[in-house]
Amino acid sequence: MGAVTLERPAKASKLKKIQQVNVREGLDRALRVSRRIFIALGQQQVLVTAVLLAVLLVSALGVVHSTQKNRELFNALATLQAERDGWQREWSQLLLEQSALSAHGLIEYRASRDLAMTVPGRNDIVLVPASISVSGK
Image (cartoon, rainbow, N blue to C red; front, top):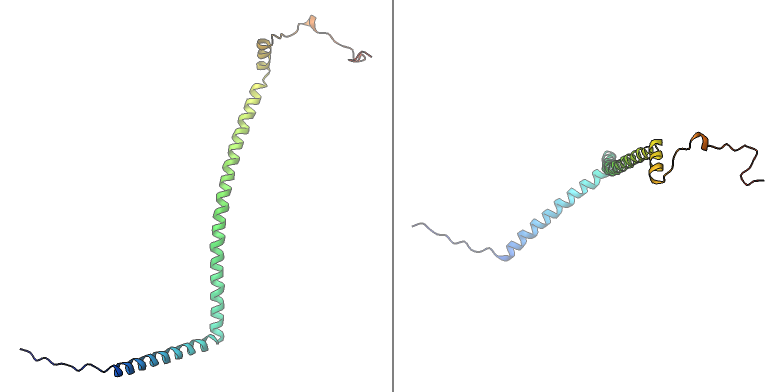
């Protein structure tokens, strides 16, 4: 059989000291990194880069907004054009109907059929002189 060794459990006070040292080292590293970042932010090149990055983001958001607005307006335009085409078709149909209903032959036919009207003969036509008024004065 193999040999078994037993280790003594580490004391809690040693573990706490090791953990405290690790935490302090981590805090020191974080402070050094943050100091470097703040020092770098103070440099002109980094400021120019940050400003250009902000301008780029604003420009990108503007492009997205204008593209969305363009799509909405294009859809509205297409809807309005379809509506205009419908009105145009209806207007054309009304013009055709008006021209069909106002044809002389149709009017003459309906007058003779519905109202029993006839075209007057030569003997039935009376010319009124221009000097005589309608009221008789």
